Length: 336
Image (spheres, rainbow, N blue to C red):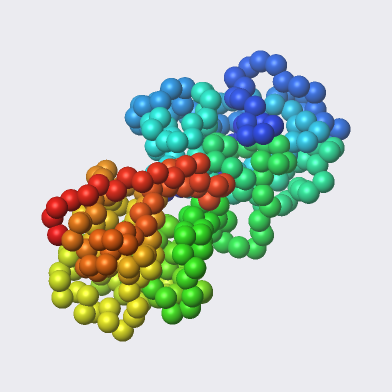
């Protein structure tokens, strides 16, 4: 889903954001490199003043855009997606929560409209994305500090630019940070048609890695399978198919996965663990099923009883920066 720029203008901060300005109130002096009109600019933004159900707490508001300071950059938002993490942040159950009131949205692409006198790395017309989460992209226009923005090429598709900061970077880091994979090695993942999952498929293919991609069953499963394979997926199977004992025979042409990427949890994550090679690693970066990761005490590889595979739960694993925490959340089960 997308928040597109049919809105128009708002203000944010030094490091991350300097707070919302009400529709009327004080505004600082204009920077010498910025031509401001006598009347303060009015902008529109999706704002929430307290945590709760997004349908109830998010409001479309008209706000005042403050003047551009010496190190500030005024931008016009071009496009901003709606991600699950955006919803979790509004609900108040995400690891990173901005001060309230806050503008929703962590991701998006904007075009530079004007810059302050001390800005050296950006100029009007440049495309930029947020450098960190919590910036608030569901607005028509904003003023950010230069350090809060990263320039991106303006000749890439708009939707690609707007979604560049989270999913592709998360996929790349998971593929690179936990196992030293070599061309020909395999990776298994669930939620393979998600934004991260599709990025994993494409990056893995570029790295010469082979992927087993698990998705939920659906009436148009063949259409989805064809689309993922067009991105570079080698195998596309459903959750139900993965549970069949004979399914392992389908992967005999490739090495057992050394890396599993889990975004679901529950039974789905258990099945991923069954496919892992001894000493392999499963990275959990989401919990769509809202169920714990359960590891069987009767693994397919008997030596794993003594040489336990690595199970990692990454708290707030974001592309914007280093993981803020890692903790083990594996629960043992007597069921095989």
